[in-house]
Image 1: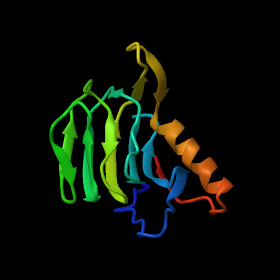
Image 2: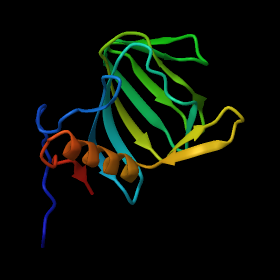
Image 3: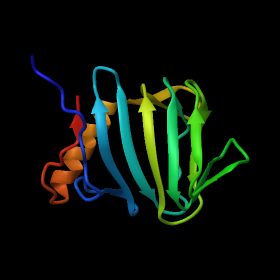
Image 4: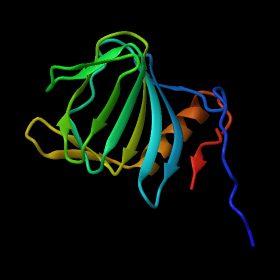
Length: 149
C-alpha cells in the first residue's frame, strides 16, 4: 500500500517573493486546483489598493506586520490580527503602511468588480499559481516548490 507523506515542509526561503508592481510582493505557498483552495502571502506597500472584489468561498487572513483595512469597514488589521471573511463578502483592500505582510488562505474564486457592479475578472487559485510561476521565471528565480495537490 502506498502511503502519503506525514507532512510537507517548506522553509522560509524555499519560495521567493516576486514583485507584482510598485514594490508589492507575492508568493504562492499552496494550491489545490480541483478544490480551488490557495494559500498566498503578500508584502504590500502603503497606498496599494485592490479592486473591489468578492470571494465565492471563505477567506482567512493573518497579518504579520504593517496595517491594512477594507475601505468599506472601520476596523484596521495590524500585526497579529486574524481576519475571517465569509463567502460573498464584498470589499476593497487598502494598505496603510509599507511592508504590510499578510498570509491569505482562500477557498473559491476572487471576483473583481468594476465601477458598475459587474464582474470585471475572475481569479482562481490555478490562475494565481500560473501568474506566480511566470513572474518567478521572468525575475530570475528557479521554479519554486509550490505545494500543488
